[in-house]
Image (tube, one colour):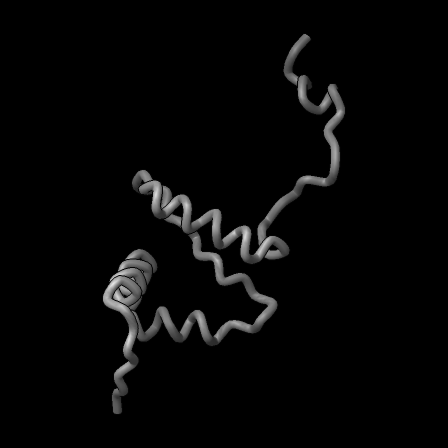
Length: 89
């Protein structure tokens, strides 16, 4: 059984593009999003096999801004001068 979900054509195109990048069907892609718990990040891995468009970069950083606690960061506050210049005399 299938159902129809009405979305704007631009939204449908974007979902199809994201599913294609993941190498899965649109159905599998949407299931992967809604199947996550609220504590799991929705951010996708961005393939490094090609250059990203400015639109994709904007989207990526917008997603990080929407979910700041999900961003993977090892930054712990400040870095000492020694940390920064460890490879200099």
